[in-house]
Image (tube, rainbow, N blue to C red; front, side, top):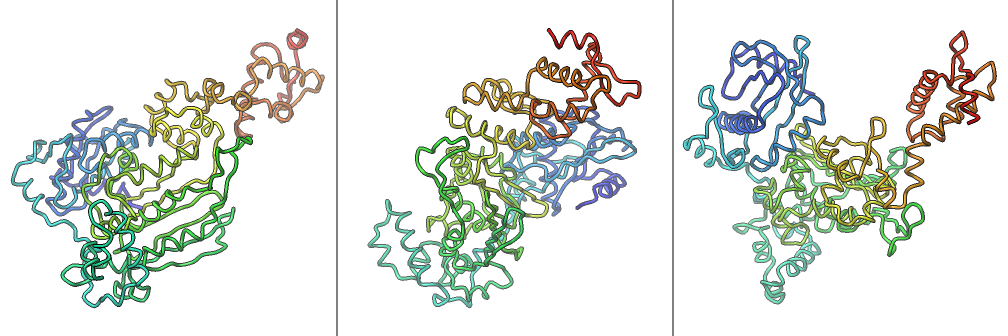
Length: 561
């Protein structure tokens, strides 16, 4: 974990440079100006061979006096800012981190800006910016050419393996690859022509062989397990782990190459149970597997395609009772999951271009940017929770959880009854059902459509949705009895207790099942507020010691009315 107070001290002690900028921004800052600074500092970091640039709010840019800032206060606001920024930057890249710290008892905001990728100019709303002294101006042509002429980061999977030969490849893997190649290219190449190619010709056509030599991608997809040593020190393994309800490992197995065959072996370990009904006894139109075949295969293929093999890590695949977790090493190139869902068409570049080409030829993935979106869409069709993505670009890791059960019946019934909901709306509603962070704009949108309503500090299903999905009983249970009914119960308790009175724990025992859904602690707080309000209304009083509540004459009269 980086020490951002120490980083701030280092930045603060030095004058502004081409990759460091201080701004007062005491309460607000223009969104487009922030985007221009992001573009400029990102490009300047690239040109100076730095990994990051820095923008600091809450510091006077001339005197470096600490003034503090209230800009985008709170994690939700900062996440929303990242999401909004990603809509207007090259490759949807955003701040690597936005970290608030305390300096001289004042809030200071540190923006960690990644350098633009090699040979890619960072743009904001289509325009590239750079520093010109203290000014931010469109990037001049010389700097733009310098970035564009950079050689891209070498594709590790495209490197040739001089010591590898056809004998290092698995015959069944080659047969399977050829069969898949014919399926993918059926409209442009006849099967007879593909069958007539030699192994070398076939591998060359599918980008696995170049200049008569095999690529690392060929070993990954088609190689015999023992040929993995020719990729040393890279690790090309998938580890399947089975966990019980307490997350204790009860079984595991390591799987090696060839990945074109390995995936089926890994997925065969999954206990994909047959489901016949939703909660509440509603039958599925047809029996349905716990996990969609496309989803669990696509997620594993994505791990293989986008793993950073230079990190020498295994791909992890964890099976629990009601969910699957996939993890791979490497940064998430789209930046955020929101950017991946909203991006149209293929990404401009891939970490493992050669490997991805081979997987496309062999019908394992496509590169038109629809894989992740289709995973979300399939979960929506099944009325199941949306996948959870855990993206840590600092630690260079990506994880995704696929759910195989219903979390909230209300969410499930809403998806069943309202097929007009967009994927974005489903993702937002999914965040509500999981009590996950959600932007203020998304909450306002869902409230305006009558889909959710606030209860205490949380949001839940609205009355409109409850009526539409025939969930009135559950809605009433979650909302609790009306105030007047709770008062009657409390008055009856006080009447029965007599002169000795009752304590709050007695009220909890009486009222707990009639209160809005929540934790025992939240219910106790609710009862406390109710009793105080009844005392203010003259219906209850406390005994001299203050440790018990008794009914008043007014309370007795109200109980009889």
